Length: 127
Image (cartoon, rainbow, N blue to C red):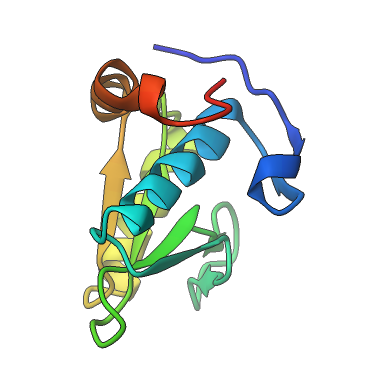
């Protein structure tokens, strides 16, 4: 399932630049999770992971979201992907190899659709 990217800044999300409406909507979902006490806080694209000794191709990975469930828990990362191309698969494989202790959760088309169906009506500015 391929989605049309709607790149741009979102006023309701602190004027943050998102590469797609899916990323912006997931940020809105995380804000709802904060209000409900499910998530403590989140950041958008704060960390880049580099794959040492890779000379060509995918040499780094920038996860979409960094999330803390509570103030005292270790953060984890969330990648929002409506579809997977070869480069996306390579990034996740290399992430698992080079950073095995870093948790990366995937929100694919199925998970995103579940959120949209169940919660979009409760989330202001859903696109």
